[in-house]
Image 1: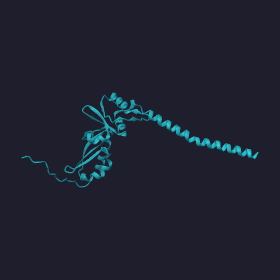
Image 2: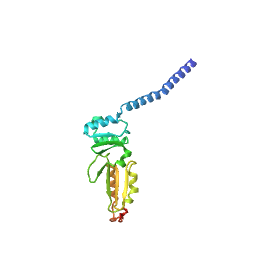
Image 3: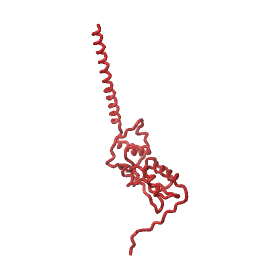
Image 4: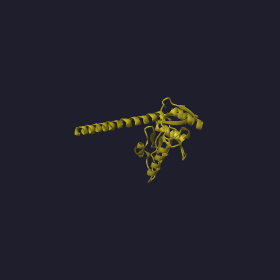
Length: 206
């Protein structure tokens, strides 16, 4: 009886081990199915642009490099507004620039060349919209701010100082330009700063 019992126990242990070894395979298959389902449910960017075009009445021109499937989690295309659209474009490495009656959808790498809308006051724009703004300081030299602010600017943005006028030119999203503006206001304290006069080096005509 003892040998028979040992054989039965060994058989049961072997069966249990096989079942345990097979469990990760089943889990892995389920995870792969979920990933495949997510990819299949991706919305082509062209379809999203068409939906925004119908909703806003804006005319779009899309760069041929703009190709991606957008994964929308618990959100329907019909509920996306223009501000949401700009945020989605930014996440996937693109942006939209309004010029000449059209909205150009381009890679974000083009932001510093295109520049976006020039804002001058306290106007409100969508957070993800690329804008250009000239910022000033009254109590410190803007050249001192460049190494402080540059790490806050993404690769597609632009930051340059105009020492003679003590101003900064910034190209970035509206939200980040507002953040940089707040940083400058917090640092711009102390005695008034007077920038040196810059001489013109334009060639003289006879």
